[in-house]
Length: 260
Length: 350
Image 1 (cartoon, rainbow over the protein chains, first blue to last red):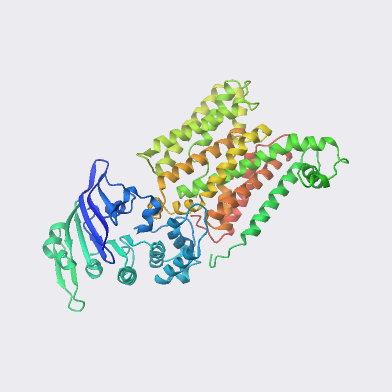
Image 2: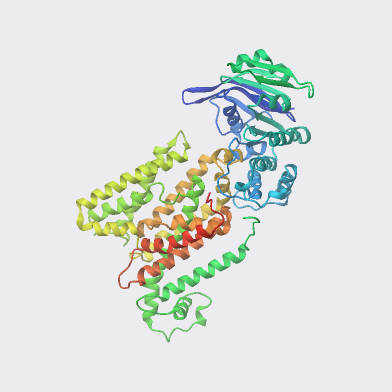
C-alpha cells in the first residue's frame, strides 16, 4: 500500500535550488535508504517530508492527502522524525523525552491517558530503554540516547519514521543495534522507515529499496543490487569504488579506492 | 540525579501558597510603623469575606488599617506581580531560546524601558495619565518599541531564528543604553533619577498600579502556564518540535508576545529589577527539574515570594532611606544562587 508520496518536489534556500523535481513513492512496511554525496539534498528532502520546510513547488501526500492541508499535530500522527542532532537541550528524564512522542495526541495541559502511558511503556520495551527511564537524557551514552530518541518516535505511533543518519556517531556495535531495531520496526511493526545513510555498506545491508540522490535530483531508484553498482557509484560520488559480493552474507560491500 | 524522586507536588504548592501568604502578612506588618505579624494578620483578615466577622480589630489603632491597606498592601501586591511576571518570563525565554543565560531582558526590553523612562524624566513629567504619571507609559512604550524592532530584524519570511533574535536584542539593548548615557550627560540633574530607575524600586506603586498590572500579569501567566507542554517540546529544538506536531514559529510568536507584554508591564512601574528573571527559574529548576509543567507554576509562586521579601528589606533595612530593590535581589540572590550551583550535583544547567 502506498503510504507517502512526494511529487515533483522543488525546494530552495534563497536562490540556491537544493531539490529539483524530486519524486519518490513509499510503501508500507518497507525500509528505505536514501543515499548520496554531501549536499545532494537528502536531509533537506526529509525536512520537506515532515513539514519543517515547505516545498516551493510540488506536493507531498500521505494516503493521498496533501500534507499542506494538515495541521502540524495531524501530520505528526503520521510521520515521526529522528534528527541527526539528538541533543535535547535541558536535562529532561528519559521518560519525559519519550513521553513527548505523545504530544500530537494532546493539547494544553491535558493529562496523559492510560493509552498514552501504555504506548510509552511499549516504546521503551521495544527499544530496551525501560531501565533508563528515570535517568537524565544528558547522562546517556550515544547509543542509549539514540535508542531513547527512537523510542520517542515509536511512542508517536506513526506509520512512517524518518531517520537522518541515525548511526553516524556510533561505534559498529551500536550501529548494528540501532539499525537492527529500525529494520525490525519495518518487518515486525509494519512501519515505513525512511533512513538517510552515509554508510553505503549499511544501506546495502539494511535497505530494501534505495534512492540515490545527486545534485538535488533523484539519480537512481531501485533494489540495493541495482543501485549499488561500480558504475553508478563512481559516477555519482566521483571516486573509484570496488564493489564485491560478500561470500558470507551475500550482500554487496563497497570499498572506496584511494587516489594516492 | 540517579533516581528522579519527585517531591509530592500537592504539598509543594500548598507550602508555597502558605509561604506566599506569610510573606505578605509579614511584609504588611513590617516597616517604620511596626505592626507585627499577628496584628497584621488580623487587620488583613478583617477585610476577607467569610472570616471578617470573626475578627475584632477595634482594639487596634485605625492607623494600622490605613497603613496596611493604603500604603503597604498595594506595594506588596505590585512586588508580588512583578516577581511572578519576571520569573515566568525568565522560564519562557530560557526554554524558548534553549539558553540558560537568557532572562526577560534578553530582547532589549529593559534597555528600551530605561530609554523611555529617561525621556519621560527629561521632558518633564508633570502630566499624568489615570494618576499614574507618564514615566510608566513612556517606559512601556520604550520596552515594546525596542522588542518590536528586535523582532522585525530577526524575523525572516515568518521564521524566527533564535540566535539572530538574541543578537539583535543585544544590539538594540546597547543602542538604547548608549542613548540613555547621552541623556544622562546632557541632563545631569536627572541623572540620579534615571540611574535609580535602572535599579528598580517599588516606591511609586499604588492601587492604580496594581489595577493595571494585575490583568496583564494574571492573564499572561495563565497563557504561559497553559503552554508548558508546548514549551517542553519547543525546548528540544525547532526541528524536533515541528516533527512532534508543534507549529514552532507560531508558538514562538505567541510566547514572545505574551512574555514581552508581561515583562514590559512588570518593569514600567518599578524600573528594571535585575536578576529575578534569571535566578528564580534556575533555582526552581534545581527543585523541579526542567519539565515546564512544574517549573512554570512553581517559579511563578517562588518569584512572587522572593520579590515581596526583597522589597520588604528594601524599604526597611536602612529606613527611612529606601534601597533600590535591584540591589537587594542581587545581594541576596547571588550568594544563594552560587551556593545552589556549588552544592548541586546537577552542574550542567542545560
